Length: 430
Image (cartoon, rainbow, N blue to C red):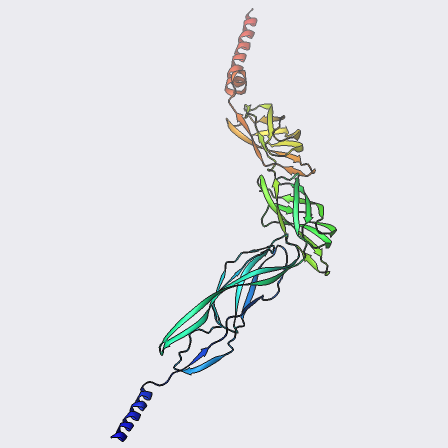
């Protein structure tokens, strides 16, 4: 019986081993995340630039010791994994603006890397030098894992918040700052000048410098002479520049932008173009005129001196102005040009023309084209937009009506002939 009992026990043990095999799991008992960071590519930037900065984060955490044990459950996470990693880049004391929000990078395992891209704007007046941007990394990691049974595990995590200083180098550069911009004789549809005072607010002493005026997009201000050579342009120095520009005919009375850049040779002998500075230039309205006199009155067959009053309704003085009319059928004129002279904004002047109208003219109001040729402050010649000189051709009244009417003239002539005839026969009878 005893032998039979031993055999049964061995059978039960074998069955137990076949039904529930022993479990062997791996457990890491040391190690934590060890994070470092650096900028990928160049970390040298110019004042005024806005760049995409890629920061590479490396997890150098390693586990020094592990053991494999029967009936141990494998952990879902390693203690060296940085879980739910978030990266935030701050400006700190650097003269930059960070335009990006914190970046979610997920889980970063040991010996792994992750990249976060931030938009960084370097201020235009940033001094040259090396600055350190705080990179804040927030993550969790597996602190401990306790196994209570063959199928039960409890995880405990710690949260870390670390700051890494990221070096950023700002290059020395010429930085353009337009202190003042004064327009000279600048009106729509004319040429003029812009006088500027420009300062180098950067930390670079520019050599062989050229200050260039550029058109801003579709601005109606177009440079005619766009560059001024100034030679050396030391940091914190100012220069005076003057440019001839043209303003398109369709410009309104308002302020329009122009851009200014400096092309210079830096301390390495390289030819460099600075960041542009945009400044607004006020533009006056287009020179304009109006006829403010009442319509002239004429009768068919008339030759008459008519008076016309012109007014300068624009924003600028015109010089040596001459008015002209275009006489069309049924009008003619031997004197179709009249001298006005200088005319300031708001001023007006009366001139005269000698005009004839044909006897066959229809009784109605006519419009004759009129324009003014003038010179601006720079002695450039322009012609105004056409104006309409109104002339009313009306039926003659009084003696003029009788004289100008052929029927009335025929009757009068018949009466005169009759009177002469009667007078002749009366004298003959005597």
